[in-house]
Image (cartoon, rainbow, N blue to C red):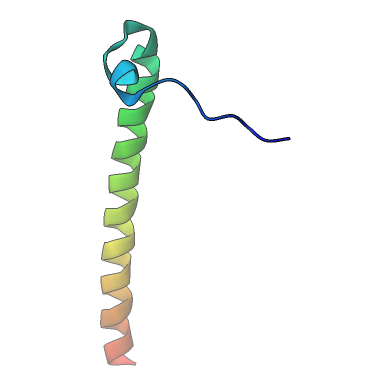
Length: 54
């Protein structure tokens, strides 16, 4: 079984009031992604520093 391609355009998702919750979820996911990246980057720097002292 193959899923057919969606016929909903990006423009409609970004402007149609029916997709308000979708846009809210997109914004929340984007924020979580940025926070996760910042955490991973800072943790990687800490690991590099710890590696220099061992």
